[in-house]
Amino acid sequence: MKTAPAPLEIVAADGFELITADGRRLIDGMASWWSVCHGYGQPHVVEAVQQQLVRMPHVMFGGITHEPAERLASRLVTLLPGDLDHVFFADSGSVAVEVAMKMAIGYWQRHGKPTRNRFVAFDHAYHGDTTGAMSLCDPNRSMHASYGDAILTQRHCALPTDEVSTEVFARLLEQRRDTIAAVVLEPLVQGAGGMRFHDPETVARVRSLCDEFDVLMIADEIATGFGRTGTMFAIDACDVVPDILCAGKALTAGTMTMAVTVARQNVFDAFWSDHAEDALMHGPTFMANPLACAAANASLDLFETEPRVQQAREMEAQLRTGLEPCRDLPGVVDVRCRGAIGVIQVDRLPDVEQLRQRFVDAGIWLRPFGDCIYMTPPLNLPRELVDQLCSVVVTEVTRAFKEALAR
Ligand SMILES: *Cc1c(COP(=O)(O)O)cnc(C)c1O
Image 1 (tube, rainbow, N blue to C red):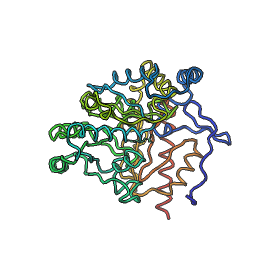
Image 2 (cartoon, rainbow, N blue to C red):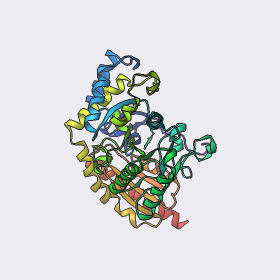
Image 3 (cartoon, rainbow, N blue to C red):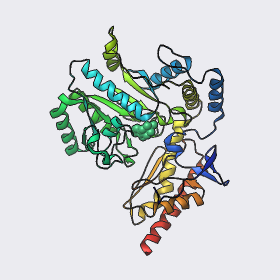
Image 4 (cartoon, rainbow, N blue to C red):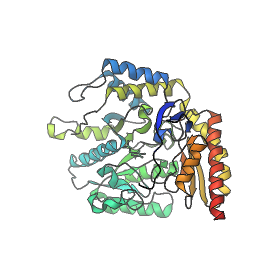
């Protein structure tokens, strides 16, 4: 935008800090959009990628396989519950969602129900920026609203959090099941669509209604996966096994772009055939890129050797205490924390650009968005830096609202 200030030039990232061109160090409260789950420059990840770079930075994944991908796939299916046993490698989160959609549509085609090619998604959903994924985003509140009927029409409704919304959701599935391939959900935390939380019972309710009406369930764990909400995957806290699961963002510890779409046995079986036309035809050029796989394997090593998920769980209490003073500010609608996610929701943001600049001046990097000032720091951000993040946020948000009131 013409009116926006120039972007901040970052020349290096070290540990938990971004280093600006003019030599300042900022605590990264965003973990580069949820992805840098262990902080920057983790030696184990760097070494793994360096070694892979020398051995084989890339090879096509059609008719070829390689150890980094095989190992990663088998580790992911071990981490995931139930028979989520089949991994498709995509090159970004949005593409992983596209692949999930194609899997669901293809599943019903192969079961003789080609009209089941639409999706149910929820209000405030965000599932990515490619055209298929855009269609799943909340059509009214998303940044894609301006594309109008260039985007596929899907069904959206409120999350089934209470009796009334559950009834509406159930009726939608019942009446539209002949056209619906799957229900798509960000379990426990809806991210870019407003940083909204719901409880494990809601996720379980979605699963059981999908079962009742024989509709597939897709869990989009691109933001919530890899410890962010306090369990390895958000579904682990819900005791739910979706039919298809997408993960991305923190998969490679913020090193390389890669995501996965993982399918249960029943979905895989629909494509497992003697006939070429039954295969799932999708093959990104950089599918299962060995550098990205090496980074992801090294990241999973760190999840095994360090108490990363525990750290995310413990951060929740600290964020709660640290951000609590904001709750009483006029203009603050809600303060909520889950795992390594802290959110201050406001009724109207004070001058966002000014707030962001003041955060930078105070040594932290956060990017308020929509009606939220939120943080998603590296899961292992040391306690004193979590405190520093919170105290800068409390100070600057308080000051911004005070100034707004005085005007
Ligand atoms: C970020 C995100 C995506 C899109 O992933 P990209 O890698 O940005 O394409 C999809 N779904 C959710 C829930 C996300 O947070």
